[in-house]
Image (cartoon, rainbow, N blue to C red; front, side, top):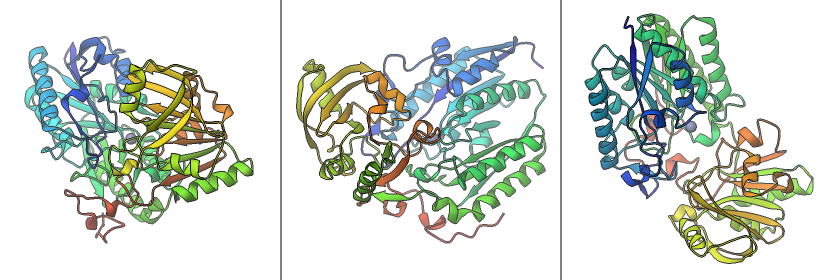
Length: 494
Ligand SMILES: [Zn+2]
């Protein structure tokens, strides 16, 4: 048991929609604050995995944390496609150099997502772990945290020792999983815990919009995992729902269990939960009704007429943030008192910023669309600017138009998760009858789980486009959908 414990901390995260045309290049990861190292990296995400990890690791007096230079989330957040080989090689190269220069280490913490997709690197998280292992040696303990949308198979844990994925979608427990990772990493380094892990894939694939854990059947999988963690000492269970919009070989549901040296127990837990997921496969896919945009807007209109407000109209499928289908339909069906948040349009916000746009100015511009076919065509909006501000690395323009409607223009894709976040732009969330947003499930945090919205409607365009629930319409190259329920008839038995 080392008297002094040195732990290297690394971060590399992306949720890659490989069907988007704009690659996630090296420069997307470089901006003021990123890459980060030392204390800046350790303080980068104080309420997320990193914050929880650092908090608990520092409760152990003998632990020294070393933040190795790492990129933070790219500027484009989740609105960009394949991470380039150059970007991956550049940052992992710097990480390895940092590990070498600052080592030796007793342990490594990898703050990951799990659904990063890199051109030419089929399993980037496993590849990162493999390279870290090469440098830190067989004795060091490697622990990671993951999003439940991670696409993982057994390969990551062939190189690393432990993984801790969030259990809720919306992801309420990021900080908690970071805390657990720190405590277990220290225990394993001290020889008090010997990770025995088992991983099993369940051949079920579906769109993320269906994966809300606020209700059955997705919550059943999580409840089962929590039950195992409660009834057995030192058991940790991950239920990866997977991320179908990354065209990578390890998509689909993955179950992992970790025990203290008891591989048999890990195996039986994984089998139990994998069986449950397979038994519930039909319900998992039928969990959320998706309407066409025209249907959804018509239903929103009816709900407003019956005062079942506020209404949330969520276009779950917009992956660029620039899609205008919902905006067009809201105008066509003549809705009023709707807040549309947001339409991403980097060209428009750049132009408005350069012109010194400010509150009170008249607004007349074609906005949105264009970036790819899934964004649709631009829409001309005539109105008045209510606010124009810089914040969170974006330029935001709030425009009042039509019958008391308000549109927020942003530079990049924005998922509005909490109504009160709109106050930062000078808006009163209580003033709107409907919210037209771009989100799949994260909005339920502030609009649904707390009872705020009275009507919730998930919509997508008819076409279908790259964020669709109809996965068989997507041009996969690395995934054979016939090997997954509901597209094929896979033979699954545990
Ligand atoms: Zn996620």
